[in-house]
Image (cartoon, rainbow, N blue to C red; front, side, top):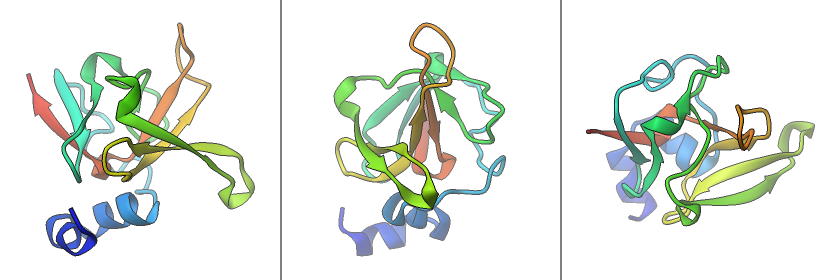
Length: 125
């Protein structure tokens, strides 16, 4: 999907997050305290990204997951913005910015995929 079509399809916040690597305000996203059973997908291309069984309450202000559905669902980019070194997470299919991954999650892999709600859609199971 091209950027003009995405601009029409997405809210201004979702467009800025996914296409310009912005971040939604903490605790503002609809999936932050949402724990229904299903699958989270990329809002831009509908690629399946995260399973609800891997979601946990991190109290970070954004939806947090321990794993991606499959390794190729995401791509990782070194992010040195804001005088920090982080790992940016993007959709492996359409390259939309999703959020960041940190090494402070729960056992066993200690990963916390910190994802913007506006970058996600949800399919209930």
